[in-house]
Amino acid sequence: MTDTTVAPGEQDAPAAGRLAELTAALAQDLADGAWSPGPLERRLAHRLLVATAGDQELTADRIRVTLWEGAVALHHVGDGRLAAQLAHLFAVADVPGATAARTEARALLERVAGEEGEHDRARS
Image (tube, rainbow, N blue to C red; front, side, top):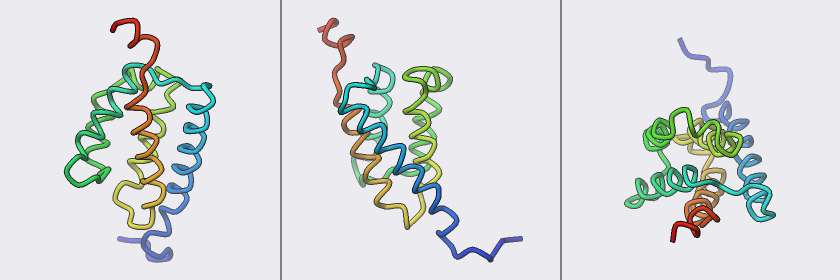
């Protein structure tokens, strides 16, 4: 049985809004230096972006695999902020009306994947 009281795609508008808000907050904290993604967060962001290299699509399957790869650890590093962002992204991955939120999330993932932290510089 399906609920037809809400037009298709409209029920996901709050999820897209939450993703956009979380992405903006993470991007601002990254720019301000209030949040610095660690090696696991950078690795998983990079892994997800590599998975999208052919079509640039952040699909639910690709996000699910990335979250699984991070397993328990991703929910603890950086206060679980990237895990939360990926979970919200997963919720709207295949929603046609959430393109702008996915685009902003992808831009943040590109920044996170490209970040080089002190830990990485020390190893170089």
